[in-house]
Amino acid sequence: MNVYVGIDVHSEECYVTAMRSDGSIYTEGTTRNFKEGIRHYFAAVPTPNIKIAIEACGLWRGFYRDLTNMGYNVVLANPVQVHDVVKKMKTDQRDATAIADMLRCGYLQKIYIPDEKTLKLRDLARHEAQLRRLRASLRVRIKSYLKRDGDFRKFKWNKEVMKELRSKPLISNFVTLIEAIDPEIKKVSKMVKMVAINNDTTRILQTVPGIGEFSSLMIMAEIGDIRRFDNPKSFVSYCGLGTGTYQSADTTYTVNNNAVNKWLKWVFRMSSGRAIMKSTAYLAHYVRVKNRRGYKIARKSVARKMATDVWHMLTNNEVYKENS
Image 1 (cartoon, rainbow, N blue to C red):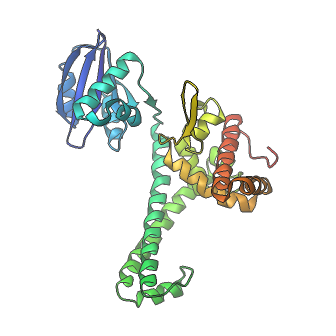
Image 2: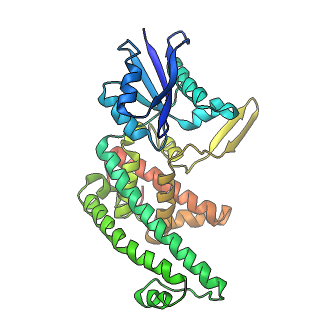
Image 3: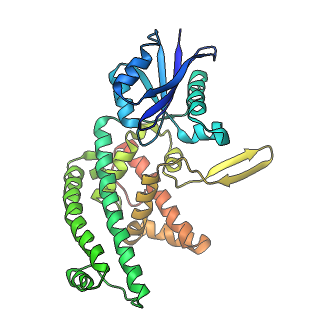
């Protein structure tokens, strides 16, 4: 007997639905989100033919690791698909049942799971990005305080400016936080640099104008295995740089695709600005699109072209060529 299990994960407990091949419920209920709770629950399912699917969320990794270490066959379910199926009738029970049923029928959209090494590199790149975003938010807050007092000047964040800002009431608290974050960013950036200069894939990526050490590591870690994308169009779509299509009978129009890798979307958009300044090919592409569609669409088009170039480079294991 085959059993298909859908799990809706939460921090303290999770809802589990086990379904037979004919669609009938074998067992369902809540269990503690700990190894002992999971082991106890599956002890009541006397079959080696268990297939498990858990919804991808912020808690999936530890849960997935525990289950695979126990010897179970585990896949990740796309949360967008689960939401579309359950919609406004969402409950933990409905989520778990929908996941189990889609797994049973073969309709479940499975999410790629990279190996542990790639996950650690992904964590490192995202960690630096989060630290830099935190510092940027503090700088924005400082400028909003200055504008409130009528100070609209533009300045660089050097030692002289920081010393001046420290003398201002309230703003000095933000300055203290920034000065505490700066050395932490340098530590993480040093780690990123060491990985980026000693990895073959990141060295290939850094031959693309606009892609540096940090962005090359993030792109590599977020992609994982480029072979999972059959063509550049599917990779561009995964990066959130394309558009979706709605088609019914004679009606066809484009829609926004929200089921994308937001980190790749961000890093390609960020790198596209530098690419325009460093590459005549990317600059020419930008100008050509800008004259027809405007600068926002032109920037996105450059990012899309960069993603397409990256797919070809990694697929063929070759460096960037300006005329490619």
